[in-house]
Image (cartoon, rainbow, N blue to C red; front, side):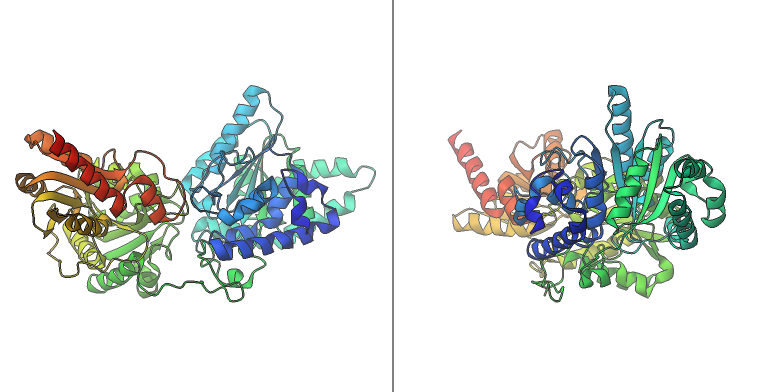
Length: 623
């Protein structure tokens, strides 16, 4: 097997040229077999096998640098840099990351996880090379989906001023997670279909190669590049910016790719190679359903069907149903997503109310300010977004929504620990970054019925509000406890004495288990569903302090700026001298792994919390 000959970076150069396509097939087979067991990003990785091989053949790693935008397409890169034997641990705790990680390999030059960052990082590496007197090649690989993000254009604008070589590879598969939308997609499609220009250019170059003055003629043609391109390819955005454009190139032709990368290395200044690839290439289920295989759960290889299909609804499903009902009741409700209609559960809303659904591409900043404009226009916008991705729009939330106190609802999915995607995707900061903004309100449901109630409440509030819910199966417990949602009011579920558990959102389920453990040991335990993180229910905290000797706050957020800090601050201001234990995530990044395992590791599972409470009680008794 050719793969066995790849033990470290640059080993691919030992493979015979005629065997490279066979190696590509072996890599695809390996990826399909491995990811069918571990889960992971399959479609994007199958699409860049030949592209990655060409980069490794044309470059010398780790001296040369490759920055992968987002990084979910870097599996072949990891294989070619000696990490094939680690793939059994892909996205598992202490195992191989699904994204580039500098701590894993010196061939991973830049940690990534969110989109549209690679060109900025590449420009930085090029300027550092110039200052340090280096000679290495820097390549940023960015997908056409990521090119819908505004940061990519900020970087392109800056890259155009570079005086030394910088290669940008635009991996164009007409997809982000779902199919691309908007003007950028249309522009690239025009280039993609301009085969007449491509065929003519290739014919002229081939005819001149080998002639006595062929090289000189080719160079003159390249220098006079703009006129014919302007006629055949509309706009020529990149050329007009001062970035040399090469392509389109077949991203599955290794020889052509090596050739064009070698050409690009000789360009003085920035050069963009437009590469056409197929997401999911080589595996029919992924080719037919690229969105489904973007982030795949373990699956049956023959059919592509998940090995453990979901039999119960998750929170995203509940949100999807609620959105359709809200849209039916109120024609002013509109929905916005940043390239994730499937992931956020808005696909059904889009199908039912296409004129009230907006996919803005991978552009969270624009999504939020766009929503603010919709609100000023008299509509009721709901922005559906993952917690981790909403971080990118902080300035827009603060300036464009909250200063104007506009009625924008943020439906925040994947809040708390999300597991396998690791540090870049854990939604453990939203309480912190949202509650510091004046006019913002933040709440979190305890179960699937409360998510429905909170969304209805949020739409009617008439002010900025975030409804935060976790990834995974929607909790069905505590159905009998369903008090109407009121702004800043908690819900008492059990009223006893001694210990009061104030739990937020997903932690209410955990608090139930904690209570059972402590009750089994003879303790009296109250349970409060906090509901709101901003504003907190100060009256509930005051009442709890009067009847209990220990207050325990529980949240799936980092300590700094979280719910626990707000409760402690109130207690201190009011002189409520009661012991308070904050159960939260440490102020640290949390790596990838199974969510339940991660909770145990950082001490926010039921058993760990119960033990910590008993230790505190013992310390209180000993004083």
